[in-house]
Amino acid sequence: MDSLFIMLLFVLILAIFLGFELINKVPSTLHTPLMSGANAISGITIVGAILSSGSDSVLLTTILGTGAVFFATINVVGGYLVTNRMLGMFKKK
Amino acid sequence: MNMFFQSELFVNLSYILASIFFIFGLKMLSSPETAQRGNLISALGMLLAIIVTLMGNNIISYQWLAIALIAGAIVGASAASFVKMTTMPELVALFNGFGGIASLLVGSAEFLNITSALNAIALTAVFLTVLIGGVTFTGSLLAFGKLSEIINGKPFLYFGQRAVLIIFIVLSFILGIEIIVDSGSLGISRFYLLVSLTITALILGVLLTAPIGGADMPVIIALLNSYSGLAAAAAGFVINNNVLIVAGSLVGASGLILTNIMCKAMNRSLMNVLFGGFGAVSSSDGNKSGEIQGEVKPINTSDAYLILEAANSVLFVPGYGMAVSQAQHSVRELGELLEENGCEVNYGIHPVAGRMPGHMNVLLAEANVSYDLLVEPDDVNPIMDTVDVCVVIGANDVVNPDARENEGSPIYGMPVIEVDRAKTVFVLKRSMASGFAGIDNPLFLKENSRMLFGDAKESISTLVSEFKS
Image (cartoon, rainbow over all chains, first blue to last red; front, side, top):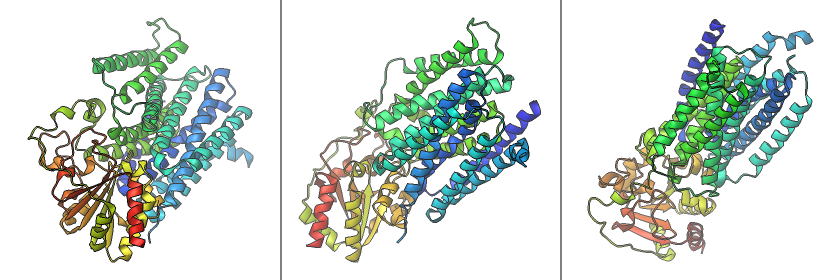
């Protein structure tokens, strides 16, 4: 169990460094779409939500999981669509 | 074959692929040319992760899942399609909050699921997920309320503010430790322990956001953005899932970088933004180095037209006022007319102009302004002496010369767009009221400043028609 934790922690640390490297290269003109796009990515919690909602174990878990699926879906669908809409407007003449 | 697609191996390989898609998506955001495709790739990664999870053999019942997925998709899609670009900060704040509550619910569901045996590490992750998720949720709702002016946008300060905050932080940690060690010393059951922690986290979100005023909103939105990612990463530790950790930390890092950029652009520390209650406390000591001298010199649109018509170089400096009066389309029209007239036109955009990072850029992009004309203070300040006319549209604090000249000013040291160094400055303003930060602006009284009073959109439109006639 501890080795699994260490592995997850390793992934966390590397991902944070990768995140800093990637985001530092985003120009300031795209900061709003970056935020809404990042927001959509944080909807990844939907994976955990689906597992809780569909596992059919305890009623309370199903209810909380279903609520989580609802909110995370808003985040994912809304986030990607609005980012797409915004980025479509950035044009160079 | 069916067995393979439901196997742990296939699911995890797909999660790795999804993570790669997220990383590529963010990488392609480094240029406006590739950004839209990057967003699509990121969305494909998300779709892959969702489908693989749905197909997994842990999923037994689909009915509630389907309802929640469809309902969420409808709400999300309508919000994304109907939101106006001026109200984008409100939408992003709201979405941040939804991400936070979703992670909170995932953590709670796992904690209350008696079939999942959680070790101390997973329990710590539950605590962090609920705490960060709860703070993100109410913090974002309050930010949404302030941005949409449902709630008064002024910083809410009270005596003993920090003490109250510390009490709730300590309380949340006591509850958290009890959740982790489960000693039973507090005499409350698991369920009520979780409920108490959730309530504490929700209150903390309000306490942290309430003292933050309108002008500091870009910072708090970026910070909440970061929190929503961290909550997802913490949830990843609860269910031992790599893709949650990778995606969550990418978002966490992104929000932190933006928070840092915003703080630097205001020359303030994060602590000062979070606890300072800027504007509410500092407006009295603004005039330390003597009264501001000079007089306000108004100008009408016909005279402004004559000056613009003769100009070789014009810099527009937009602020939140441009968003309020929806003037971006008229501004673009005026910009094009000036270019046809042989004038060089640029748009100087301060990082904290507007209510969220990049707010002005999106508005001008919406109005069809070419993105290579949008320049940052560092690019435009060195050549300011060559600019004939600066047109300040609803910006105030980000062009305040006190940031360079008046050591007593609360914004002294903040990097600003030095419009007062241009040959002429037009300031479009409704009245002489001070900006969101409540600080006097000596720019209005400078020798080369001309005030064009009235609604920004109307003033610009009048100038446009002068050009056309």
